Image (cartoon, rainbow, N blue to C red; front, side, top):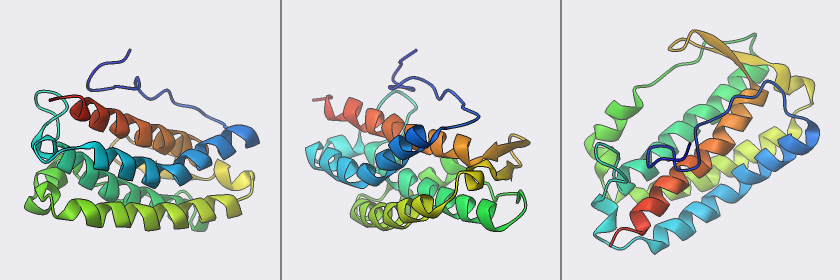
Length: 174
C-alpha cells in the first residue's frame, strides 16, 4: 500500500532475479543519479527543510542519507563477492541523518556527486558479475539474516524510487 512513508509501496523481497530483471534493476541504479539531480533542481529553498511526512526526514536528510546508504551498499556487494558470506557493518541511519553534516544543505551537492561516482562504479561492478555471483550473500547482523545479491539489488533499485518518492512529496508542498 502506498503511503507517505512508502510512496512507491513497501519493498517486496525477491529470492532470485533472472538476467532480464537484473539488467532492469542495474539500469535503475545507472539512471538514479540523474533522476535525483533533476528532482533536486525542482525543490525551492524552503522545501529543503521540509519533511515528507510528520516525523519524517527533510529533503536534505533524505538526499544525504542516500549517499550514506549507497556507499554502504556498494561496499556490501564487494564484500559479498570477495568473501564467504561476510557480516556487514550496519549503521544507525536515523542517528547519521540527525548529525549536523546530515542536515547541512551545503552537503547536498556533495552527496549528489558522491552518488554519481558510486553509482558509476557500482553499475560497472554489477555488469562484471556472473549469474552465480548474484547468489553470493552477506549477513545482516541487525535482522540476523543472509541476503543474496539478487535480493540486495532488488532492494536498492527499490530504495532509489522509495526516496525519490519522498522528495516528490516534498516538491508538491507549496
